[in-house]
Length: 435
Image (tube, rainbow, N blue to C red; front, top):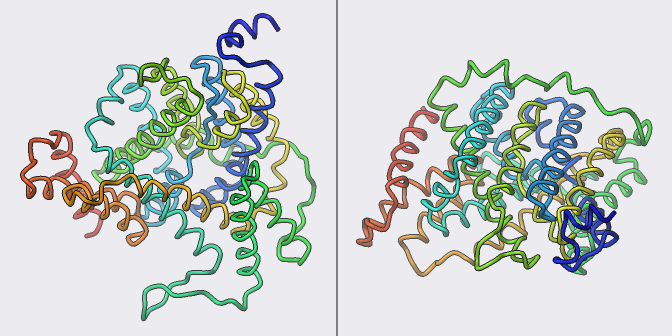
């Protein structure tokens, strides 16, 4: 115990073993919904849900424990919402890319990610993109996720006359989703711990009571096999040979860049661990995410990211890496509960997607809407993602408009040369992928 206390610097951080364990448990409960939500999202892309469940648990456990032991931060890592939606709905369904090829794209992005992190290039690339556009990407992904949630709930459907329309309120499954949305919102409004997870559980229970959700055959079993997804990325590396796929790889990098960097800064600030405005051991923290992304690609899941739900563990006193170690160990333990996937239907996960979308949309307030030079491209990013049903297309629209509006407002010199390059790349990307 003394070694643990010394290694994790309990005295310096003003924490205790008991408090760190409680914080780790709290963080796990708050983010455990991803174990069931990620297989649902990637399952829409044709992937085996059981294998994705196992890959999600292992990748989350490895990356989070790495974060705890090496970077020593109370921050958990798991496959990120948003980038998994990009994988399933934009790349596989939207572009028609096979999920096996898309997974190879993640592996390539992960390897580049590792190299960029090792050589500290990652921070320079992030700095080249304006803060408002980074914020717009996060908000746009939120709207995109919420749109998917509303569609899965049956509240929004396609319509040949008006493009989209309100769904039928006669369907009992839709009412189950509505119940879940309202329940989760009430729980969040009352600051209930792990509100999203509790909301999913409550919705599933109501679904079981009314026969809208099938009862699982058991509660505990051995972990589903990784065979359907393990190593598939390696076998499809030869298919990363088109301009379209390299843009996909670039987009995986960009989205993961912003998601993790912003979350790490926010959580470190919350925990009071920032020093002189900078994040100590930032390289090791970023490496944790890179390791998780690489492991996940090999096992068969979408890119990992630092989880904002870690704030729940920090809120109850988590300050050291032991919090993350406990969370990671619980992810390993969760491998026994795969039968519960049967009760996690689209109507059960839809409320979680919508609520996460609401939480991500709050970033809109941080955009400088009074400056047209930045407001216009930011708006194109935000509105482009849900309306084109593509995260990459939304980013492309905003990044193309940005240098144009900055030149028009006579601030061309404020634009980093990388943004001009990205604008040109995205012009070709849109032309190539939509012809």
